[in-house]
Length: 349
Image 1 (cartoon, rainbow, N blue to C red):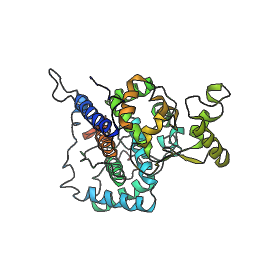
Image 2 (image 1 turned 120 degrees about the vertical axis):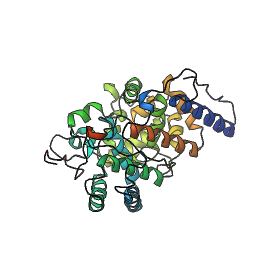
Image 3 (image 1 turned 90 degrees about the horizontal axis):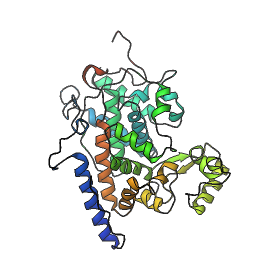
Image 4 (image 1 turned 45 degrees about the horizontal axis):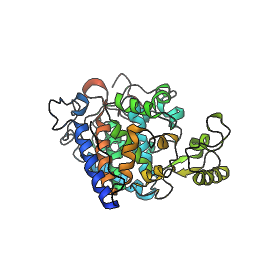
């Protein structure tokens, strides 16, 4: 795709307008629309078996049940919004949205090192129980997770996006797979791009979805390798702002590995462009965050998004989430509808 970077000499308002136009043009290119001789790839088309009205007859209040439960849960604990987004992404990382991350059995994804700090399982299971009472053996856990992630996003003012339903639950869940495929915050940009592209997403999606780190938090254990002995050098990561590094060392020395630090140090509860602005100041918390800036394939997007209006960020995020939720899903007889999200059905079902 062809992209022209916004001039750094423009005024703030002009930068926002230019960034908006550029990103929207990039999205059009990414979606394969209005390009001469371009044939839209399969992963850009709606997955076979997914329909907007999938539950209209069989469970008409499905979306309402999920939305009310998510809204109530986040009102009681605002940290559940980023937690649900993270749970959704971890499920996507291993074979697409098939609810494999929800399985609670020895050796399942839930017991992987990559899954240690995941949250939101109880909420999804309670929603499933309510739906089973209203619409038995009908709504998949994968669709519940997709709807919950969408509704969690709208609770932090991300644009609403209509969902297609009909995902089926996977019959496999492996901690080995999770530890192999889920990004852990230390990958190279090349590895991240390969990860996204292998799942039908783009470099733009990588930059936009990384913006989820404008809310939420990470453990000190996740950032510890950057603070004291980066890559065996005996020194902190030189790509991190020294002042920010000093702050993190003080906080994590006191809190220990299990302590939490915000992913966005300035506006941790606002879904805005603060994450990208922080990258320009060398204040990306995770190594993979900060690596996006100097890389020519992603740095352009980081700078554009840093100058974009928050409402554009929220719109772009919704668009990328829509694509993520439809990538590599199971439909038809490729999976099942679990009776409980935490357990794969027995062969008798």
